[in-house]
Image (cartoon, rainbow, N blue to C red; front, side, top):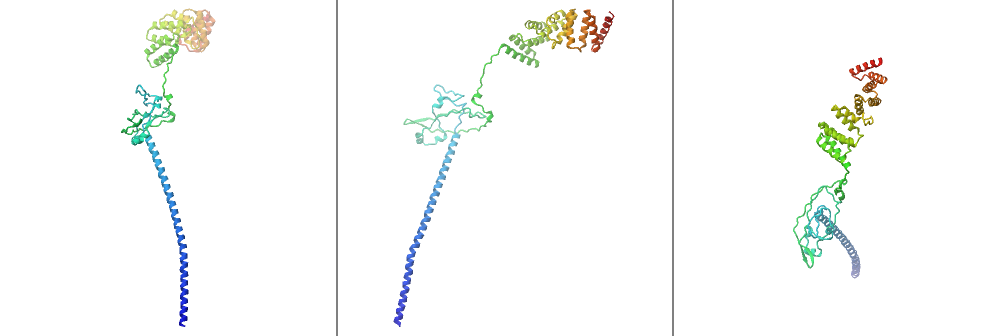
Length: 400
């Protein structure tokens, strides 16, 4: 029994050992599979991480490159702004014979010939870079009409940098230069912007005819009269008559000025000369008549008025003096004609009817005289002495 038990126990142990071995084998077999999956997963994670890192590095590199480009662009703009402004009104022009400055425009010689300009930015570069790219900069033509500022910026001539030739290549020597300070300028309104052509002042000689110049002097003389400067007015009137002897208004005013200074004969000479040039100008005749009436020379005054009878409109004084002189000098026909014109033109003036009555009374025209006397008496515009005279003459004429 013990042997059988031992054998059974041995079998049980053997079975157990086989089960354990089978489990271990299963584990051994299963373990490699689990390790492979883990390795694959780790590898995948690593690859994704590397790819993400690569993309991040590329993005950072692109951002840095863009920032560098922007900084470079800003630096270039600042360099351009730091360079002195070219003012077309003061830009020096380089010629072969002289160093004069042309204040109007840029010549073709300055555009065609390169000018060496040493800026602060280029001076800091290496000599080797300057050899590779010479700092030769042609001056660009600037249109003066596009840049207009409220104040003129004084520009200084561009100084060429000293140069050194290395293997037939022009290399600018480094020069210490101070950056120029550009004063801010006020921009003008677009409506006030002027082109170069509008800024050009052209002077043209104006040729006047003698008559036109005489009119100009006449206007100046009138202004002098208004200002009370009679001496200057007389000089200007004399200039007018030298250029245009038939300028009647200037002659009339000059005669009036001379007569006012009691230079009667000079005034008469001026008027008589004008009358010989313009016989139909009634003001000359009227002024001469008044001058001689002041001298109590009625025949001479009447001599100037009788030959010419202008339109009664605007010449009422002329006809009044003519009618009175004709009546006084017993030229009754002229007096009757003249008074009739006055009564027709101004029928409501009693003195014209009185003059007509007196003239008709002298001419023995009783009916006309009585009619004129009655008309003048009815108006009531006369003085007491004139009314008394009318009443006396009416009574006498009615008795005849």
